[in-house]
Image (cartoon, rainbow, N blue to C red; front, top):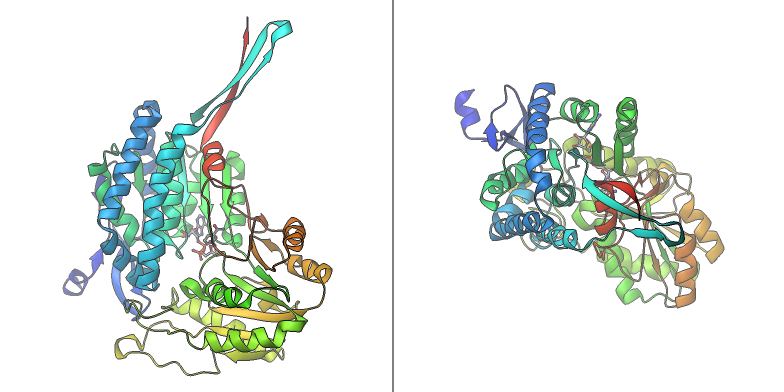
Length: 488
Ligand code: NAD
């Protein structure tokens, strides 16, 4: 009813520099209360068509600006988001279920930094030049933006991951049509409100809200969108690959993971345990880089497991807006059920659930009884073939198993379809290098986790993705290179 809908936050698409209402909407839930609090445009082909048209129209002007002009605009946008950091953090926490602390310290600062980083890095690229002096030729390369980029992002790190695509795309001179996840669209809409003030010309950044099946596919199938940058699940990436094949589109695919932590008996457990807790449960375990298979060398297995479980039990789960809370709500009821079902499957297979789901009771504040919460869950004695050790769970569930030798653990760590991130814990520098070289993983962290230098490539092997993102990698993805030969 009208009276009811007035109380809700209603988002609008952002096309050609204007907010435009949509004819139908999707309900968006607050994961920590279970209430509908926002309505997201349920856009389709028509809206995508309008956005692509606007992006195409804006391309000639935007692409002919100098890198320095674009850089200044990106920096201005970063300043404006930073100025509203608290409002963005509150919105992200409410929309996604993540703790306000995580949104304040990770999501929004990183979104700001994404713009600053590409504002800077775009000024420092060099192209190549070679000579065939004796024959009287020289060759050089030049790079130009590609056109309209389609950007599709997931719900776990909403503004963080969307800006990780928008920033390099527009820094390089492309114009974009972005589609955030229909479950977490609010901060993208808030960012649209700042674009004009930052000096982003109309049509350079368009955001069309809606589902993957409608908006996502319309973008993927649009003949005037030559490149798609996608972050999300492997299943969706397969569909995107199939749908874009007739157009031979350029794809960047950042997908799921089943990330191992390998802990040798010479590891410094005082650092390893708190970091492995974070790598397992940060953001409710809803980070593609989260650890979900912990291999512990037999000599320290019992000691590790005992303290790990003791510490996991100390994690406070509850109202995400409470700054003392360590873990908030999962994204949706369906996702919570899916994550729980993995714990049940593990139990049915004879694994032991040492803490969390089904073992400990979860006391929630009155306002959060209908939220999508679960406790950090640790599973032991689970077989490598189990679905809990093979499939991406994407929740606060981690499996701990024992190993004996370096050779064995490398093989077992590689024995999954994914290859995104791994962590290795050891004080033996030679071993750390050896193991890192042999792991099938796009990123290997040793004695740390989630430390990133955005200059360097980010991305996965095997089913975890195709392509890399980073200063040079994103520049290459978002530009078309040409080789030019000159006769002296
Ligand atoms: P998802 O694949 O369901 O959705 C991602 C995005 O794709 C959403 O915006 C969705 O609406 C859209 N989409 C869905 N179907 C589509 C289609 N047919 N065509 C075009 N677009 C479509 O993923 P999710 O559940 O939102 O996110 C979780 C997944 O993302 C996990 O697998 C996680 O590991 C992965 N992830 C990967 C990275 C990385 O950098 N490698 C980072 C974060 C998340």
